[in-house]
Length: 393
Image (cartoon, rainbow, N blue to C red; front, side, top):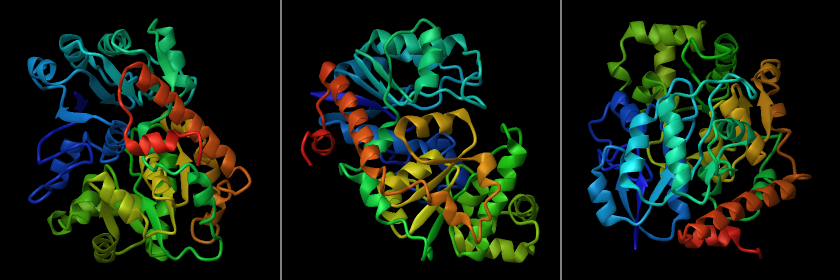
């Protein structure tokens, strides 16, 4: 039997893990293929790792007749689509037309703060109804998202977090991570790029924080791991020579206004990183002793690599998911009061041994709820996910 997994794109040999062939691709190409953020590959990869069945890869633009002929169910990993700025009318029509059982995880709400009232486009409401009608239930990121969906009269939302959190099959993930927290030697750091649009909620504070975190790249030899910024991705792809001085000067003003432009360019050439495949991302992040920043999927990838990650939250999307998954988080306001050079290790204090076992039990509880939903929908579990969900370590 075969199931169909929805991807953002199947171009450039893309599959569940990311882009298969980056030769000749620009940073713009990478962002287009990934849905404007390479972190999107994390939950697609996480979803595929749950499934113990043959798959085909499709997109919302695929031929519905082809999908029906070749698959018995749809597998959908989503993100912050419960969002005033996103209309999922076309994907809703696709789900309705294909009309197969649909297993979906990861749906989240996007707002500036948990509890904020938001208006959802009709097309997105239709999408949620289409998923609900064709499932035994569907996974959402947290209680805030569930409350919004319940309020729309759509049934079946279950708080299950994000599939990317269950990539690593070890049952003692948090305990293993807590053993690696060392406040004596932080020689190898990964700093997650968090350059958001200037109109982003709390944009002034977020920009101030990013300047402080970038000091870890400047003065502590940290690597700068890009997810969504085209200029940083260009440098990470070895295409920094194509970035003109005007564009670079604007970026320098945001990140390191005191640096000479030539020094700033050289620093980005040396320290920029990007991961367009999740298996490579998890492998590569193991080089660091710790990872820090505002990107939720960058944080989760570090955790799956069993590395301490300090997550700084700045909106409902990140706060909600951290709450559901029990990922230690520091608020934007608190992080701004921490000296990034001499005192940044304070951001890792919440990753401690005393509650690591409790966090592991919570993670297993979520995984087993996903297992229950999969079994109800007759979706076979992968060997790795079965091992994670097993009752004995």
